[in-house]
Length: 188
Length: 161
Image 1 (cartoon, rainbow over the protein chains, first blue to last red):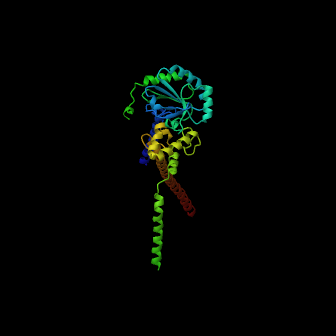
Image 2 (image 1 turned 135 degrees about the horizontal axis):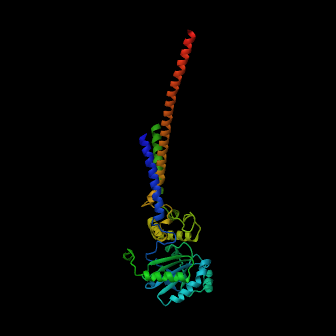
């Protein structure tokens, strides 16, 4: 009888400890949030885009420049909202070793072209005929923007509508972070 | 005659088992493998749907990538590792059995065991309490019965006299 009473107490104690542990982990645990990307701090997946002007562009050939890769689609309203900010920022950064690339995804090419005519396409825009870039970068929706440092590492990701202030913030941050060592990645 | 028919029957059964063995051990087709991997991954932009079930553009692209990687000769583990690297572990349909995730695998079983243990304790305690009550009831009953019987005896004696 006494044994069962003690066992009863142990069971209740174990249940309480397990639930407190789970609660603590959910609050303090180091888990990835949906908006962060596992790619941050890793080598940017290389890609070759078919640009709308008929030429090709390969990411790895841009080494030495800070690269902003913006995923967009013509049917995407936030993409239209951020298009002007991207164009304006590009005009300011184009002489500073900062390159902007627009990747058109999940779209019809004629719609994409008319979108570019309407909202401007001063910097290179293109599509991946294999439609793999968006999966390589873990894109969940548009617009999504990745900031790659001059060594070719993904440093920042932004999900949502960009403004000139947000672009400035992340471009500056990416340029500043380029000298910070990335553990293990350089040995790959 | 019976022995011969039994022998034939045994040979037929074994023969059929042997003849079906190669088809069972045949390697899965590329479609089967792609489908299996697609089912084990969650669509990142859908509510509780796997990559195989979703009709979203992204899931469609992911299915294409899975097929392409299989055609290139990559294994299931390599392909899953690729998706974890790009989308994180949240893309997995089931959490990998490592680290804190063990809790998720162990907890249901533990809950069942603890629940059964609790029921056993409850039933045991309830049973022992019932026995105690019965004992007390019997004791008090016999005691009271004794008093009444004594009274009856006394009255019978009185009437006899």
